Amino acid sequence: MSEIDNLIIAMNATIREALKRLESGGQGILLLVDAEGRLLRTITDGDLRRLILGGSVLDDTLHQLPSLPPKTVPVESDPITALELMNRHQIDQLPVIDASGRPRELWLRRDIDTRILLSTPHLGEWEMGFVEEAFRTNWVAPLGPNVDAFEKELAAHVGIGHAAALSSGTAALHLALRLLDVGPGDTVFCSTLTFVASANPILYQGARPVFIDSEPNTWNMSPQALDRAFNDAQRTGKLPKAVVVVNLYGQSADMAPIMALCERYGVPVVEDAAESLGATYQGKHSGTFGHLGVYSFNGNKIITTSGGGMLVSWDGALIEKARFLATQARDNAPWYQHSEVGYNYRMSNVLAGIGRGQLKVLEDRVAARRRVFQRYVEGLGHIPALKWMPEANYGRATRWLSVCTLEPEYTNIRSAQFIAELATKGIEARHVWKPLHMQPLFSGCDYYPHEEDAEFSGHAFATGVCLPSGSNMTPEQQERIVAAISQMF
Ligand SMILES: Cc1ncc(COP(=O)(O)O)c(C=O)c1O
Image (tube, rainbow, N blue to C red; front, side, top):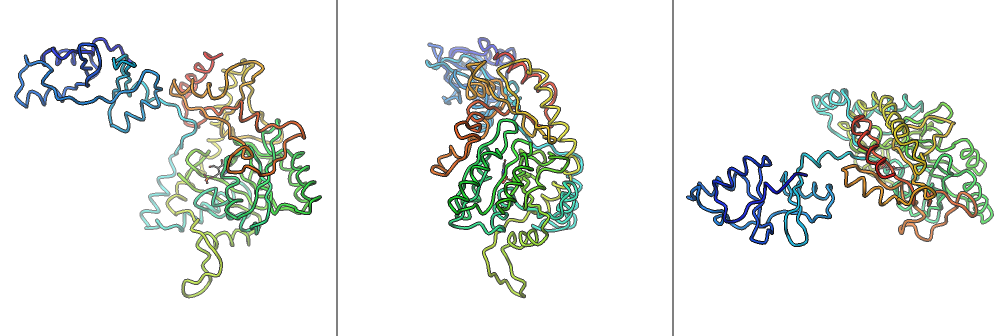
């Protein structure tokens, strides 16, 4: 924002005066107003040059200018809206006008385009080499040496037998349920505190989700709620076909009791580790505990292929079948023959190249995201109203996102207000996932709270906020966030 008094100019000023004011204003723009001070249009150097080329002389007044309704924003606008408008119209300045149409200030792109986003891709020095190799060898198809190598390298990194590189984490979840023969009439237990992609594939398969709450210590699936759900399912003679366990915000669920329960009832587990690649549980990698595990390489994840996913398992036959289903389920015949429904779900060789490069820096990215979390705690840990998502002592969380709750006991600030306040400072924070049992899409689905009469996920949603957590965030940017939050309390 800048002082605008010296940018405002009236119709009866001359072109000569306008040129001088443009020079002294230093913003490359003037604001032409009528007798009541209402904004008529903006004037740039180019506008004045066009007047002169059109035959006007320096002593002519600005009445010569054609009318041109200006792009403006009202005073209550936030910088993000302003920036969107600037991008849409490819302009770098935007007058802010009051209710009567008078200019009050001027937003400048250079002042507001310093947004700090929640979690952005962070490329390293290796990706380009693999991608160039794919181009050089003309392997730009949805298969190729990078795909094979990425599968092997990821499987080796997390310590699992087999992996299939796919077009997204959602595709991997869908294939997992298909491989487990989930179909119409079946139920699938699923964590409720998660992104909708964890449960959408249940619907793709025509099955019905039953949602399981989280526990406060890990924010992940509550073993005691799962136990009650299994008890009820057994009593009614309808055990689920699978359990989708989500590892939230970079932290593994408490897999030992969860696996023990699922094994007791003979129900296979799909581990949705889309958000937890790089995390560990009892010394082993998150995503390797279920019968099938799923990773995502979406642009906001800890490493990315711009979009992509991986399905992993100890069961090589399942992963082989996944590759078959992901390539339109083409039978082994000399022509195109198909006996079952397939999908176009394979990852491209170009994107797998990005993945190979990203995998090399995964451990650095984990360390960087943990440092981001640490800096938040150092800068804001003294504020009792902020309660940080705990790291369970059974493993290492990646802190893919730094998340806290605003404790109503200590503050009246609500999450929506907190997020909006940071947005005015160009800082992107987001709500914690709205639990799936609260989503209109899943209304009527069964839900098991952590305790009979006490739930956690609703509280996490109502009070939780995710803070910018990118591994490429600078300490200065984080200081800005810490200062903005400190000011609120
Ligand atoms: C928990 C969870 N599951 C699944 C997905 C889906 O992954 P993708 O976006 O790669 O389809 C995501 C993220 O996008 C996620 O956060």
